Image (tube, one colour):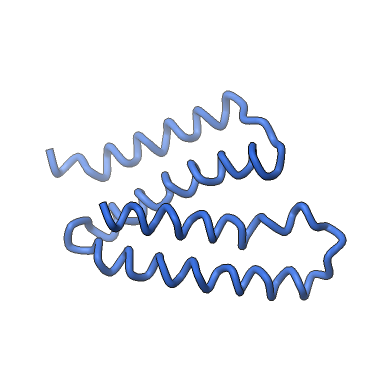
Length: 110
């Protein structure tokens, strides 16, 4: 559970690092890049331990698929709440495909 929690929080940081600047189109690109790197530092401080501690309980492939599902979940909330975008049917379909990927990745555990 510690791994999942750390991956969730790290993905919040990374989403802001990659996409938070979209609301500030007037900011100079160099400043946006520096700010994004600063935010990403904290993401790495969480993601690296999450993957190190989680490896063994999960395979590397399982960690990656878990991270992708968390990323899309965090991004969906970010897009709606921060960017004011709306979710459509194709977003739900893409998420369902990722959940299927998780099922396949963990199939050997059942």
